[in-house]
Image 1: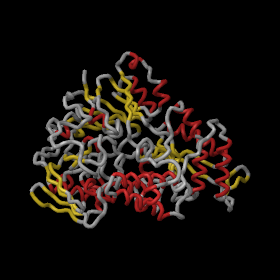
Image 2: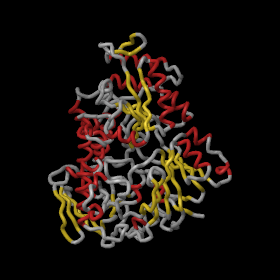
Image 3: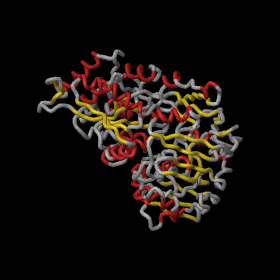
Image 4: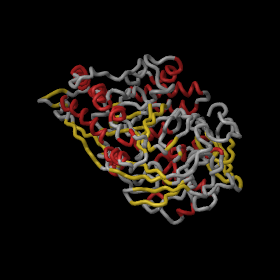
Length: 571
């Protein structure tokens, strides 16, 4: 995106891969909930999240230690002009799908159009920005964007998964059934599955890209089984019993107090901590601003104030987890405290007078006194509610028409920690006179309801990268607010947010990109859309001792694809 890539053309392997890693071993990972689809590229169904990282590939791939840079994967060469108005790719002649058929230009063009028109909503935005796509040679194609200032489109075009056109002849791609497993070119294939219980992925011994520098030392396990469990507590017990090979622990207090069972003491299980430099993203209870009373920022501020973070954090994590204070906490992209200044202030200036309090002058999350009662915090919350027209009448918060404030918190029933957080939060809300209930559903219903914005308040987790770009439109752009399946759960519709995303995409220097991101961060956190929880600055993975990882840790740390991609088995 800016300047030259870090790695030279003749690099041996990615810096955080072990080129000498042995191949072999079988591991079992655990997911909570269930699944009813093995097609991660359509809107329909609940899919094991790991599949996108293991079974399919794109024209280019990421170096996890380098933001805003891609390297050739299915494509052996890439050509792009200075104005980024088009990008041309030439496919590697050896690229093959898992069934042995070559990856062709026809497959690529079909994949882009099909994903953009029938696939998951995450793929729609790029397709609308493609002016034309055409074959220019036996193994080459060109994607034209026309007159655009969006400099990231060429990179985005290199990251779309490529599927096999022939597999879907005469079939409805958008209505794929469980048995319709998309054929990919990735290192693993789905070799077995039992609906709602487990999926088995086997490393393809004939994988076409095994000798590529980009792939050397990666995807080393012969077999990866994904078992499904009712909730996290059952997963933990299965891990202790040796039925699961590795777990990620997000609770620092549990990590410190409950990981001293016999298999840890004997050395059969290793506790690994991995620091990272990636942004916190946002984790918390998101409010659906499409519905009253969440369309009033004062109500949202009151509900954030009523969330007794200091007490909840101390109770559930031993106070070990720092709070998320911005959407890009823990990174250079996070907004700076205090009033907006410099380039950030310049970018926001055209919207002055239309911005919520806190954007220009600075916004900080309310801090409780750490006690269970949190009287000062609740008094402030009630004051904000009164400003918004909600007063206490007969022990209930009511509006001018006498209607009581009532809403539900939608949660996946398998998440015991989120339920514990909601329990403590609801105690404070009830004290304020709000009729609040917990709406527990299974994983499939949770996915369906959040995908159609059928909730008042719900749990929301949105990870962020060090190279934010077009995906930000999908996360909280105005157009995404009414598009089912987007992560814009809060329903944000703010011209200033849209403008900052555009600034990010048209920036020609890293400095301008950072300024636009910091300005966007101010708008998001001051929008009071989410009641933020804690952030995870350290990855905590407990695993069997035979599982090893490279010494070089990328800046993104232990991302979701890091373990199956870069770890290996060593007896």
